Image 1 (cartoon, rainbow, N blue to C red):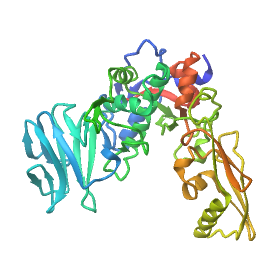
Image 2: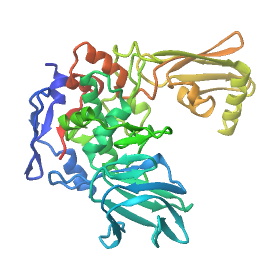
Image 3: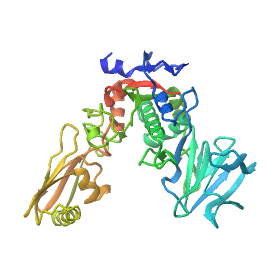
Image 4: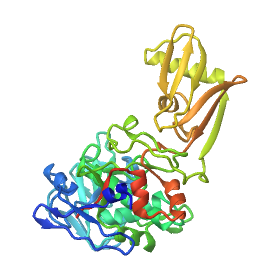
Length: 424
């Protein structure tokens, strides 16, 4: 077993004075113990996580990933409505027939009830009975009014149910089992990191789309009124088999970035994300050569690019005059390529990420890892990969798993220097 894999197998032996146990699935090697504070302890020190076993708070997910004027609700079991962070019950019922929830007349309106508060919590007493906007969820719901009188619908779901849904939302069900186990651990780690850091604006921890991770609950109803499963028995088994396991570095849960396709080399994380763990410096990946968008090419008229690029540079106070040439060469070490723009007045350099985000259409360029050249009055972008490229490569993990790599070996490869620990 390699030294990296041994390092990865570190397991915190205690949370405070409380022993932490792991019911070890047959696929997971015996984890070593390591005398260090667990990430849950450290999170407890911030006041966000509790330190006793089985006391992790629910994941707070912004359903629909934005506030809306109206949400469609239904609850197929008993529920109660109460104030946020207060156990005073405002209303309750055996079921909630399908109805609209919105804010009007200084009150949150749910069906025929009006609650004169800016936020309420609906405790669903039988998990899996909550429907929000044609999706069924585990857990309970918060409705919080924003400054534009729109409602944020925030799902409160236990961590393992969340992971069981995200695994299928983020990775195809027919991918190799070892890759899907690794995906479950990466997804859990990503969620824990954002739970610990206090969420975005503190009302919620995560979006339910690719701004965070793809979370669609238990099932969804499509436009043809078909009920389509998201969480499955297989994804629940993956969450169960990896329950509580997360990636850490120096005793802290990392922001476990991952993307669809790295294109042969994962990205140098610290040069792209300020909160990327130091070990995420980028590694070679031989597993994604058969992936969609492993290699891609986009052409556009040079005059069009020059016009848009010149306007962007003028907006940010970097005047180059009339643009003459634009060049970029993709790096082989995972660092972001730099675009050199030569004009009649000056030469400027920007990253391909800036070019992709502020000048070109992001949807046309699957990643920021590409070269730029001018050929016959065309700008030719030759690129690789799909997504930001940092950390775990989903298609790469699938390819490597097909060669016999285990879940632990995959995580050791894409998150070198990190350790696996159990958070309870």
